View 1 (cartoon, rainbow, N blue to C red):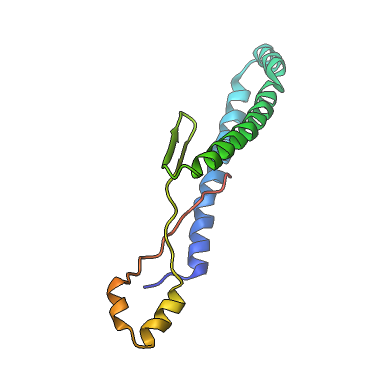
View 2 (cartoon, rainbow, N blue to C red):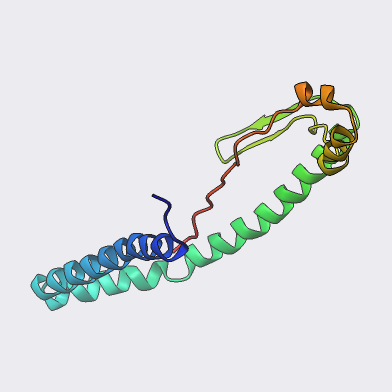
Length: 140
């Protein structure tokens, strides 16, 4: 049984509901915790929150800028290595960047026409791969 696009969208929406449920639970938990913390302790906690306010955002901004620089460095490195025709594999704690030699492609329509025009022997060289599917999850 083939699934419809609407069924897939519904399943994706259902999956996204998990994030909403987790956020709701966090909110409920915070409300309950806040209700049992004495005012003096809550004031101290607020002072600590205030002390650290903005520091994470600064690090996020620095990280974003560092990522831009790193992306440019990786792009320059890969471009310089493409000419050497060697496979590339850079691996770190953050990510893995790999590049292999590009696939050789042929104009399938023209070759199919050539087969139809009287060269069926070419069909022995033809294979058709299964479709490749790539799922990229959106940050919610």
